[in-house]
Structure formats: C-alpha cells, structure tokens
Image (cartoon, rainbow, N blue to C red; front, side, top):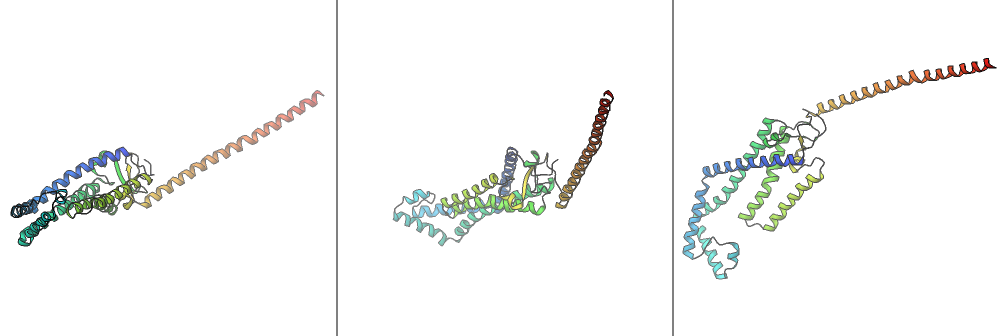
Length: 290
C-alpha cells in the first residue's frame, strides 16, 4: 500500500460511472412511477386534454399543432387560436388547475425521484460500503478519499453527492431543459449554459492533477484505486505516519553513514601503515647490498 494518492484509471472510472448511472436511472424511474401513481398526475393531464378537444371543436382550432405550424397561421387564425385558449381558462377553473398541476407535478416528480436515487445510491450506499464506494466503484475496486489520502467524512460525502452531483451536475441542466419545454426559454440560451457546464467539467478533468470533476473539487476529494491506496482515519494519523517514515529513513541513513565511516577507519590507516613498512624494508635491503 502507498500513502500518496493513487489516482484511478480513466477506463475503470468510466466503467464504474456507467454501472452507477444505469442503476440510478432504474431507481429514479421506479420512484417516478410510484410518485405518479400517488399524485395521479395522469388525471390532470387527461382533464386538460379534454378541455383542449372541447374548445378546439367549438372554435375550430387545433391545440396540438407545433410552433412551426402556428407561425404559418394568418393573423385572424392566430387571434382565433388565442381566443379559444383564453376561453378555456377563463370559463373553467378546473382547466387552470389541471394546467398548473400538469406542469408542476412532472417537474416535482422528476426532482424528487432523482434526489431519492442519489441519496440512496450515492450517499447511503457509500456510507455502508465505506471509503465513498458506490456499487460501481465497489465492483471495480475504486474509492473516494480526501486529496491527502484521509478517509472521506460524512459531510464531505454529502457535499459531493447533493451539492455537486445532484444540484450542479444533474438538476441544473435538467431544469434548463424543463424551462425550455414548459416556459419557452430560448433553446440557444439553454444550449449555451449546458455547453458551458460541460466545458467546465471537461476542463477540470483535464487540467487538475487528480482529474476531478466539479463534485470532487467542491468536496476536496479524489477517486483512487483501492488496490494500492493507503487510507488514513485522520490528518493526525497521516502526519504521524509521515513522521515515522522520516525517523526510519534517518535511522537507515545514519546506519549506512556509520558503516561507511567504519570502513574508512579500518582500511585507510592500515593500508598506509603497510605501505610505510614496505618502504622501510626496501630501504634496509638496499643498504645491506651496498
């Protein structure tokens, strides 16, 4: 195990994301069907369509035409269309209620369904599996820790999931699309905003050392490879471990230095002494020969 951050590979991260995304969609769809049945959203939609058919026949207009076909109408036809549309809601309080509920409920159901799915799969499950692991991350041996290799806290996991993934990463673009569909927000404005978010996410992934997205930047976390990552319970434990490594390294270097010094003391003087003796013996032999 290595205490430095062991960044997960792109392929493993994508595989884990894909599995988690599929599970999230399935769970969100299940919650949506349940909430739609509880709120009886279809009842309001059917009521509204009934009024559209009734007043469409009365005024001789078709409320199901597209915006392109509407623009092709003459001024008189457009005025007739507006008169029929106004008459529906001025003469029928139930029609106005059905219209309001048919817009609000789908938005509410979608929002709550996705929120519940994120809470279960991206918050509760990681709390149970530990180390920020979702089902996908568990399968592919990935985890989530702080940038300093300390175990992720509950609060940081909440920020990463709810503020980062749910609010910014999912609901922001989804609400823009809903505004475009229901409130006729300009398609160009929606595409620009969603594109800016995508560019920001891609830029963070490319240029950050840990290849992080917005949710990881907000929570100061990083996705790591659990097969080689050492995780610490606290910052103090990390500091203590580094200090221990420093002491062990210093002791090792001290022993190595001491051994080198001993080798120098034992060999160098002896070598010099033997050289001096050899020189003296040589000089004595030369004197005897003379």
